[in-house]
Length: 451
Image (cartoon, rainbow, N blue to C red):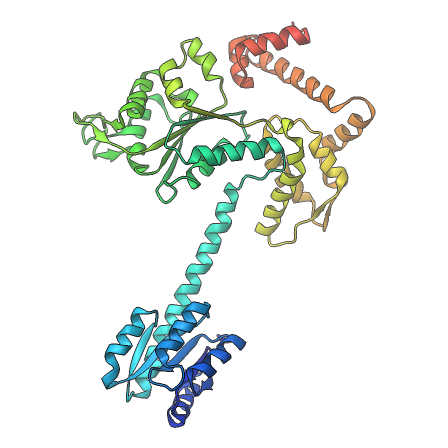
């Protein structure tokens, strides 16, 4: 099937002109309607859509300029092309300033009319393509959406909106998988820096030897292998936001330079003597207890206080269980849309089973779980049979044998045992693996009577 014919509305008070244009345009493959004046054209435009409006300027009652103004005020879709006599060029230019796409001088040749309409068609195509791309980008940005129902998250996002209005550094804390980067992006999106770059870096993913170059850049010959100059992440984020994830993993030797960048608003590339001013808002995130790390000499306390001008803590999923069913629906809908199939209805028993799970990996673990579950759920309903056997057994045993609170405590004890076994009994390392403070781990060991 070929492309749909474009609809053109010809507006002119001269019958002969309208008739001639109809013949020319229909011969070129357009669908044509006519209007003898601006008032009649407005009525037709409100009754049906047109891709292109080809209008004379000089007409009784409502002239072409008045028609153009009405079209723009009413938000009527359609590309407007004006027709003018040789003596009306100034008026035609005024129409262009007021939103017309183009104009054709009378008397005109048929080829000239067709060429102008073809260019208008291309503009329409580009506009629709841009709209499609913007919609796709909007869908992608939906991946950064924070889904919640709980009051604790509502309060947190209210606080985020307030903090976004400032340029102060923010330290975002929370367990792995709680959505710290989502909160960072929300801070950026709601700030006056939203049109500038958002640059994210995982401090735990870059080696100590390269971290300074990554953050601050280097000059050509600044070190062995630096064959050309390179801007660092601070400069890439100029005017916008730099998000330092896992800030607790930043090497100690680099921390004074980060502190200086925060305090002075300037950085120095490796191999350069002069500093460079940078306008960047720094957001940092960590699953570690930085206060304890600072007390143990593993993190500079002055850097901690500079980063934590504002601190936002994201609660773990087990402390906001009412969000779990909504998140599960969100993940299931996204996965189904990606695969081009309808989202399944999640039965209440499944929602209850998901809400009763401990989710040590938080939202990230729930998302991965729903991805696996959707592989085996091919129908319109996601019921208990679609869940892995372990989840079904846990759901039945939790109803018969113990409460959710007891189940959570038992899982916590199991994780502590596994961490201690994995580290050969090294409690400091086990605390890091569990992403809790050493003091808290010692308390838990005593509470559970773990040998």
